[in-house]
Amino acid sequence: QVQLVESGGGLVQPGGSLRVSCAASEHTASVYTMAWFRQAPGKEREFVASIPRNSGAIAYAESVKGRFTISRDNARNTITLQMNSLKREDTAVYFCAASPSLWTAVARASMYDYWGQGTQVTVST
Image (cartoon, rainbow, N blue to C red; front, side, top):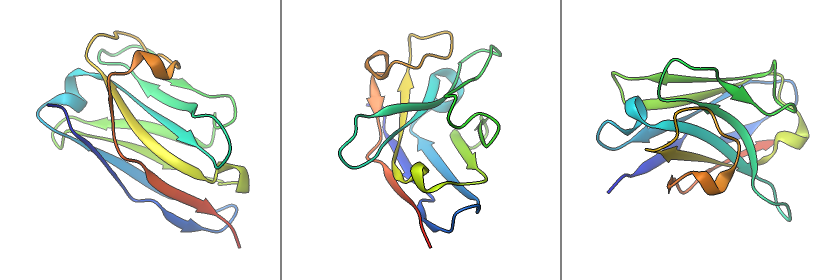
């Protein structure tokens, strides 16, 4: 059973930085395609970033491109989302997702098989 546990969320001021991490069971983070999604109150879950299981291209949502960076630490079996220049509209619950069958970065939530419980990120003064 694959388990994903997010951490690192919190309150940050606009323009600030925050890093959220996803710890995966077994060797999930090193051999699965991983992704971050987010969901704001009253809105649908939306794609943030995805890192494929091979050395293929990483994908970002246009709204976070240039500000967010997704990375993988195989030794620790984790993925991390570094978020810089945060905006109020980045406020959401951030979810980690994993797929054992995808070989490229994919933005569609339905393509991912495993999900974490989410971590709250609030950008506010």
